[in-house]
Image (cartoon, rainbow, N blue to C red; front, side, top):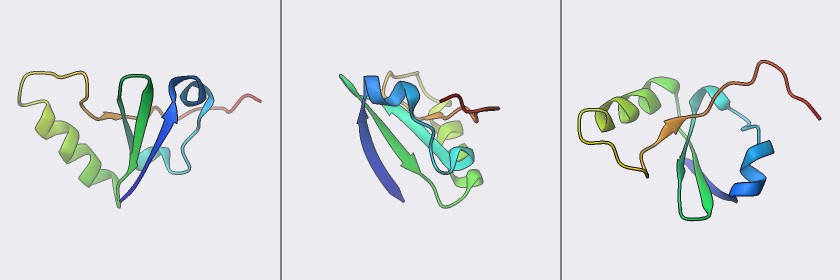
Length: 70
């Protein structure tokens, strides 16, 4: 799995290479992205987190953009 960190400001305009299988979570002033091998594995991880109390550092699926603005 590929993991990378961007500043909050950079994450606002960031469009992941594979948004259908990329999740993100907030760090203090940064955002950590992780690219899973497939969408099912990512969704299972997110679903397992949902079975416990929510935490601010939980993984969230990236929204797939319908259009990319420059």
